[in-house]
Every structure is written in C-alpha cells, then in structure tokens.
Image (cartoon, rainbow, N blue to C red; front, side, top):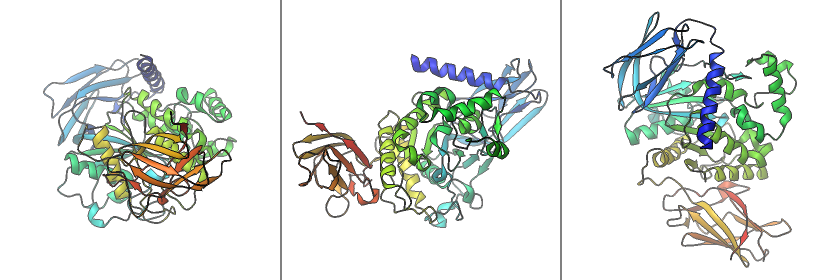
Length: 489
C-alpha cells in the first residue's frame, strides 16, 4: 500500500511539474514519439504531448480499428493510452489537433532503457570513447527484425523537465557504430532469442555519480553530503531550471554529479514511456563513496520503479569489471554493493570478472557483456526457465570453528574454471587478510586458512576480480563479494 501510494504521489508531482512548463500552445507529441520509434508491444502505451488548453487530440493507428481521443488540460497537456499490437511493423500513427501529424515506420516490440555512466556510454565504433573486440560480422543487420536507438541528449536540470532532445536511429552497418556497445549487443542477443523488434532508449552521462540520477524525494535521506542538495535547492528557489556550462562555471560546488540533475533532465521526461525493463551500468564515479553505494543503488532502483509506477520493473546491473586504475579496496566494496542489489526481487547481475582487464582505452568484449545481460533479461523479464543466466551468488556465510562455510545460489556443479579453486581470503580480529584454501562440496564452498584460526571476514575476488575462478554449470563466473561471518549454530 505504501509503495502504491508513493508511486501515485510521484506521478502527480511529475505531472504537475510538466504542466506548469507548457508555455507553447503549438500541438506536438513528446520527442520520443517520432518516425522510426519502437513501441512496447502488447500493452496500453501512454502517448503524450502538448496543445492548446481544452483542445481535442485524436489518435488513429494502422493497427487499430477505432480512433482514440482526449482533451488537453488547462496547461495544454494531453495523454492517450493506445493498445499496441503484437511484435511487428512497420505501422503508422496519426495524431490530430489543429493539424495532423503522421508518424511512419513505427514498430511494435520490446523497449529497454539503457542508462548509466561511461561504461554504458562506450560506443561500438573505435575511438576515444569506443571500440569492441567483436568482428565486423556482428554489425550486419539486414534481414533481421528491427533494432533502433533513441539517444537522449545530455541534460542537467534543477527542476523536472517536460521533454528531452533526441531521435530514433535504426541500426544499420553504417549507424550502429554510434550505438552504446553494451546496449547494442544486449539488444542483438535479445532479438536473436525473441525474434522481435528491440528499442533502446539510451540515457548516459559519463563521470556522474549515482545521486545525480535519483529524484529529489528519494535522495534526501540518502546523501553523504546534504550540502550538495542544499545547493540544488537554492537554484530551484531562484527559478533556475536547465544547468548549462555557464551555470556550472559560476556556481561554486555545482557539478554534473550534483543530486537530481540528470534525473530531472534525462529520466523524468522519459516516463511513462512503456518499457520492458532497465539496464543500468555505472559505478566508477562513486568509488570515493563506495561505502554508501549500496544505499544509492537501492534507492535509484526504488526511485525509477516509482516513477514508472512499476514496482517489479526488471533492473539489470553489470558488476564493475577489472580495471588497471581502480583503488583496490574501494572497487571491491562497490562490487559487493552491486552484488547485494542483485538480491532484490527483479534485479539481475552480469559479472565481467573473467573478460580481461580494462585500461579504459582498449577495445572491450562488450559482446559477452550484452549476452550475459540478455540471459538475465530472458529469466527476469520473460520468465524463461531454460536459460542459465547467472554464475554462483553468495547466499550465506558462516564460520564453523576454523572453517568458513559459504552457501551459494545458482550452485549447480560448482567448480573451479582452471586448476585449484582460488580467489578466497579471510581475516581474523586483527583485520589482516590471508590467502585461503577452498574446495567445493555440493552447493557450498569450504574455506580455511592456517594463519587465521578464527575467521571474522571472508572475501572473494576482491582485490583483483579476475583472480577468482569459481563457476557453475552455466560456465559463468561467481560474483565478487566481501562479508562478515556469523557463527554456525
């Protein structure tokens, strides 16, 4: 009941914020509704925009027998919910008020919001912010169902915005180089499995903290530094909405990572566009706040689910990969926060520890990241039970004398990938970690270390996630973790 009421409140607040910004009477849909768009199949998709107050807005579509109509409110906002067909296309969608707009090349399929930081922003094409290890054959798209991307222009805002800048681009061998590499290979794998058009809504901004992607209501109780939110509050009180380069340069302490700025500019305007789920890839920018990241990530998921009024909206995460530039301790703690987030219902985790170290410049194996995310999607969003989607995930850790007993989920055929099991460390009351011996026994891993007769903490693949080699029947790697032990009773 509390979540439902909160979702309604958030929706009402967003509508109120959007309504008060409708200064232009010209009839137009939101920018997401354009030629080449992908609509979420088999649902009642919200279609919205602006027009003169009190104006009748009508919609007809090639897949609908009847016309749908609504009347704009006093601020000129209109919303229609149109039944969408099974996967396919191309269709046309006509919207009429004082003029008629005909949207062409409209497809019905599955839409995924792919968002986050620099890792999600990384392009397919080689360059300063792109490059993948997959062969060029992976980019051929002729003869396959459609994949299209809507890239949201980077926008910072102190107040929730009514719309975003962006356009739909269909994937072709010529255009796919500018797609998010993670999103592209995820969509490509889904398309192969489902045979339906896939729409990617790409909202990314490299270098920003998670708190910038969280709304005001949710972030207030989850800030490490409340002064940062007070700075944004002061901008709102002065009537500042969009944050440009001049504002960033003249407002001491204001950065693209300040609370709520990306959420207001790049997330709020996307809702309630019908989506199948979210792929979130971010974390490096929060290494200096790694101890708070579990809270940030949990709050972000709750915030976006409330915004879409979808309490079970699937969320897919990527655990931070091995890097040459990361602080060892901070990156291990942040990976553990991502693992903890994956214990929530409807949240999946793709682990990248076995895909090689990344220096931030060399081509990456984004194809495998996309494949692992797609596996998680098939299980969480599509109910597939025949897809091995996860490596071992720690369920419980207990001390039994000088032995640590680790119980895992997804524990079928636990084994070491190569040679003896490695990557485990334990420490006692003095906090000094030692390399530990480990062996698989059923769904458990038993860990011990002669130098630590009374283990207090155990960690796996912590300092270097590529050093761990625990896997299962899926051949997917176990997620990195660190956990305090409870006594075995």
